[in-house]
Every structure is written in C-alpha cells, then in structure tokens.
Image (cartoon, rainbow, N blue to C red; front, side):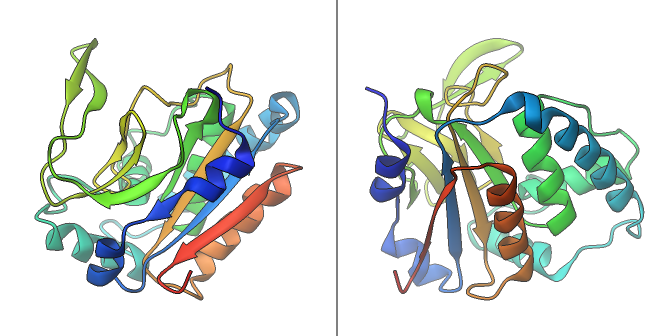
Length: 231
C-alpha cells in the first residue's frame, strides 16, 4: 500500500542504539508528493556542472572535517575507508579522479550535486516503492538487501553491527549511506520522493542545513522532519 509523505515522515525513526554510539548524529528527512521533473531538469544539469567543478578544485586526497568524522564512524563499525566510503566522499573522489560524474537522472543528479557542493551524504527514495517509514537501525545481519551482481538481481545481507536504513521489506541502504537498494531506487518515473540527509555534526552542521534548504527551495510542497537524540 502506498504510504503518504506525512506518514513516511511520521513513521520514520532512528534506533536508540545509534544515538548511544554516535550522539551527535542527526537526520533530516524531506518528502515531496509531486516533483516537477521538467522544471528541475535544467536546474539539475547546471548544478551537476557546478558540483564537478567544485570537486575538481579540491586538493588531491583532501578530506573535509565532516567527511573525516564519517571515516571515523565507518571504522567504528569495522569498515576502513579503502573498503567502503560514505556516499559524499565517494562522489567527490570519483570526480576528482577524472572518472567523471555521469548524469543518472534528474532527481539523482540533483541530490548528488547538492551532496558534493555541501559535503554531506544524501540519499533519495521513491516513496511509491517504499514500504512503511524509514528506520535507521544496527543490523543483525539477517535483513534482506536487494541488489545486483553481474547485472543479475540478488538478495544480499548486511554485516552484523553496521548501521542500515530499512523499511518493512528490508534494507534500503547499507553502511548508513554507502549503497542503496535497487528496490526503492529513484528513476525517471518517480513522482513522489523522500530525501535522507545524514549528519554527524548536530545540531549546527552548516552543510546539512544548507543542503536541506536547497532541496526544499527546489521542491515546492516539500515537508521536513529532523530526528536527533533529543527528538
């Protein structure tokens, strides 16, 4: 059954175990019931160009303070940066290494560009493919993760102890913000979208706040909820 944007926000949560280990974590959830793809297309294209130029101006191997905190968090649940990187770091490195950042689709290009420009991890979910609210938990290792291998659909599982986003049908993003499932992925048919902005610098992380403001400004009708250890 399709979940409304208000219900998606209301039913989303962060497990207390996450806050016990990372007390400065905060997530900003943004839901939009009707995105205007035509209006966003030129904006996303322009922002993607700006993001590429921004990333290429960075010094090789440069890591901003917020990304460094993500590296520390990944190490704390047993993943070294050379094995898996938080999404914003992976995007910046991909551009800086001149492998480029190809256009994937309007909404993905938009949030990837904003992620790079503000150096904060952002995920996007198709709410018509989502089941229930978004919940950040510490994985047991038994949760199903629908992905692909060699172009074929497979069901994988997270490692026990890693933070994962889940809905009622399984994992929607592994290792906090490393890899999203194809089950709830945004594509060119997506009309209702939920954005997830992760920050380890609550409550005053300028990058996360600016990223959220940018998405809200570009998506009329967007509604917002933030969750941290106080809420």
